[in-house]
Amino acid sequence: MAKLQKIKVESLRSQVYMQLKKQLMEGVWKAGEKLPSENELCASLGVSRVTVRAAIQQLEILGLVETRHGGGNFVKEFSSASAMDAFHPLMQISANQDIITILEYRKIIEKGTIGLIAPKITAADLKKLEETYQLTVSLSDTDDPQKQAEADHLFHYQLARITENPIIIKVYEIINVILAAAMVEIVRLLGTEMALRYHRQLIDALKTGDKALCESTMEAHIEETIRKIKNRD
Image (spheres, rainbow, N blue to C red):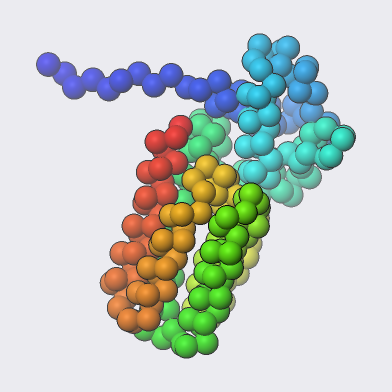
């Protein structure tokens, strides 16, 4: 008998997200233009405000729209949207898949990055990483995913800076907005427990100078993140 796969019913949030994203990419709403209100979108799409808000939040995280307090949702300026488009084949993938795309990139780059710094990391470098780790620990009990994500993101950015490779650092800085936005969503979805666990392991692995151990730990960190994100979709 042929091996068949279960049919996956796409969530309402993903369907709304895909429709809005398609409209944005096709230029139906221009940069700086206000999107229809949540009530208008609910009426047009036949879904609840919770679903519409979740879809818009995902678009905001990806840098495609911005929410102005008391003013509604607006299309981000073209530079932000086009930068996002340059890094994503956005047309045919689900909401969480955009985060997966970023994580797959990170798995390749950050595994190589930590392998590069493992043999040459200094005590001063380790001290900075330890301080950032402790900052993440101190924020773990707060209800502030933005600050938690910033600390998490800082840890990975410090690894890039430790390479002293200007190309690695520059590329990281160019796509910094994308990486930071994705980190906020990851923290919102998964919390901080896994990041803390792996950051501790990464620092301890770096202390040994074992390149293979550092690389395998980083790979495991991002692969587990990918797996958990996929399981939530």
